[in-house]
Length: 106
Image 1: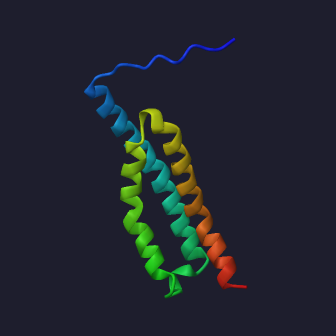
Image 2 (image 1 turned 135 degrees about the horizontal axis):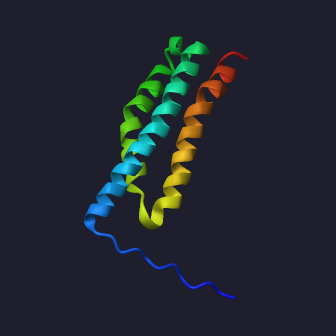
């Protein structure tokens, strides 16, 4: 049997704005926590002393706030894409120090 299509919720502008701010806070917590853990691992592996990696590190720190806003803006029908992209960004941030440390200290 084929399920009927989901009914689209009709919310006002206030509900859309509240949803955006809830997603903004949640993504800020997720990306911020992953960033802090990655920063601690970056220092623990001695990558803060590698001059060739410093521009990449600075670039990543500069784009954290933009990534949070973009992830929060992906709501409604693009919510699944936003969750995937957010988890991908968090996973990349958490694994980058380990991969770079292994590549540089071989």
